[in-house]
Image (cartoon, rainbow, N blue to C red; front, top):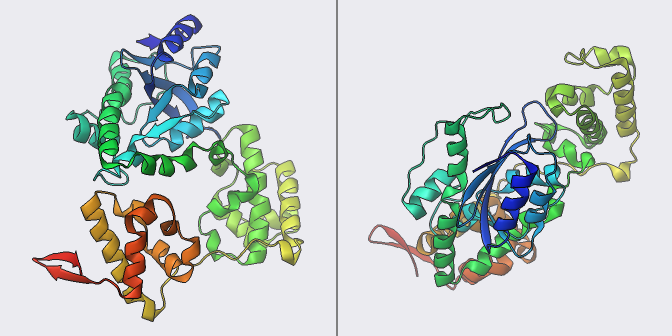
Length: 377
């Protein structure tokens, strides 16, 4: 079903709200705009699949109401980008949600399991990838494009039911809900312009004073890009932003000496200079913290971390929970240094490996090799 009118959208959303769970995916473009442009919304219910065309429909409120309906579970695969796009386009954060990528990582699949691999693993279906570079903003869509878009949700409800059954049989549904909670939080999708500097490439090489300039300049870039609805790099590239942070120009002439500022208007230069000046005058007690350098364990801890990680991998192999979902090597170093702050001390991670890690560090258990495989002593 291809939905391009308000009337059809209202009728479909009414039908969809009759079900406990629906599958959702989106198609969007973000190459030429600040916010990703929502081009399609695909929804599958146990009875039907539909492609909703937000570029052709005047009023998306019925869709927003469906996304906010607390009685209808929204099933996504790798939902973070879909959620971000829907929050901006519809003004609501979909809830409640279920992410099959996260859930599959508790059932023996890789932490970044693709949708195609998920459908193959849990539904036995192999999907084509022929339209992966489609410009979804162009109209009209071909029947082949519509079918490709529908495939992204056509099997997701079936996969969800298989995954849910397996999780319940293993007693892990609560684990998955705990892991999904963070990405279900609306605050996760609210951007703070004054935190944008943290995403600037190679910003970790800056001094704290340069970071203060980066904070102001990156915040200005966010506001300017959003006002013009263009990608932030079209306003100013990360490379140019860092060069300005290091140079800290005070005049327009000095500012223009940095290559890559030619496209900025005189007004843009004046406002950017004001941002740079604010960063340079930032009080010492308000400077951003020094970037966290790449952490290398002290020599005496390296073997301990290696042993802990070997235990994590052993637990992962036995439980089917992806290693990267349980803990990273940096996470294990955090645990050694500040165990009270570690995620391994709470929730499903503690239930799965917490006591084992404690016993390993206390010398109560050890690891050995038996028949070519690791075993716990």
